[in-house]
Image (cartoon, rainbow, N blue to C red; front, side, top):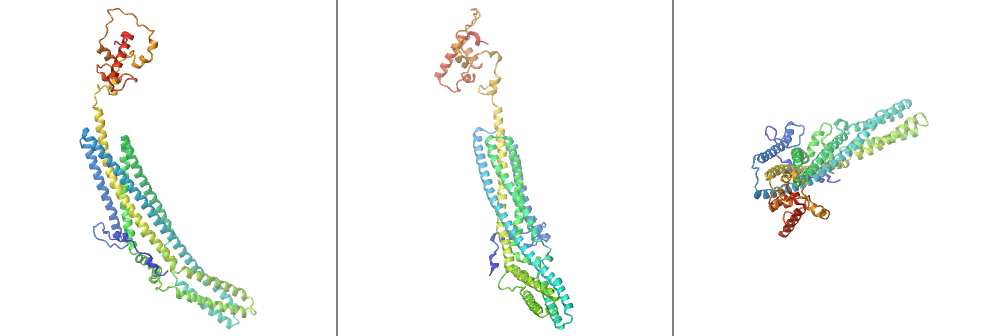
Length: 534
């Protein structure tokens, strides 16, 4: 992978976030290099989160002012000003709903991008941990075989060949080669000294990311539900629904400001790392990894020599020399010392397996595999991760500001609903078109008055009935306006006609309809006589 280091270039938004002012709680400027272990740097990130808390306080102040204005403002709204105010509130609600829906769309994209970036990070950590674990197992296995099994075979052969100084000299030379292999193996980096479990870090990161992703998802869904409930509440003029929207809108606004602070602090801290990740990693691994080895894996440049090449060459030469010695002893010593064949064949098998492990170890220690995992992790964190955090911060800012405006709109809608209820309370109870007045004006003494519908529906059956005879002195034809008054609900106004029964004509009717209705009413009086008298 020639010039592989050029594959990663920090994106422009990381430099933009890296240049954000870093202040501690004493309002003193702090170095913006990524130093998470220093207290001053931690305070600088917490200071950015507290800036979002200031925005929350400002939003609560605006909402409180709107609430005070709604409560203490003028409740009596004129009809001339009520319609423009209602139209303005409607458009305000529509605009806030559209902004929140747009912000939710941005939030869904940012949440997905951040999740993709963290997934690439954890996947790279698992791969790197698998590679490092394989290196550690092979190094420890090769050292164990050389220090215990191989030396045990050589000690037994030394006893068997004690009578042959030339064979003993060959064994001494093989012991020297074994020591060379052990020495070169111990120069390889010991991963256990790092006290870092990349697999555990990946598991913890994945768990945190799951709860972060779920929290943002629930917040996005909550904002959508608030938008839908706002439309329904304003359409139905429902007080309890508007009150519920106010409660959840206030909760969502607080959560949005909190997510803005957390997202901004995380994005700035991650950008500080992404601007110069190599420097931070070299400083973190200097206790167990030399600088040339760290640069070899971080840059993986063909101009940098492999720091393990010399050790691999010595080990390979030592193993080849031992193979030659064992092959000669098998040919020369076995006919004389048959008991030595078992140990010689054991050493030969052990050398073959060690040589095979050395080839695998050479491939694993090559910089290309670990450097690819390193680049994938950087791409996931610095490109997808930070970009997603920026979109999530934009969502949080838009949602928090828009929810503040939405709460003010709801307060105004509540005020107009109070004004409407007050107008309804001022309706004249004597108004004939008021259902309450019609119910209150009902007289039980008139329960025997036949309605127009009952008269027209049963006119044929009632034609055979005759009213009881009455004396002339008691029969006094009531005045026409009295009959109409009794027929039309006790009021001489003809507008009361529609209030009689369910079969009454509509409130507005033509003169011809009125004449027909009154003539039929007179016929009804002549038919029923004094039944309509109260």
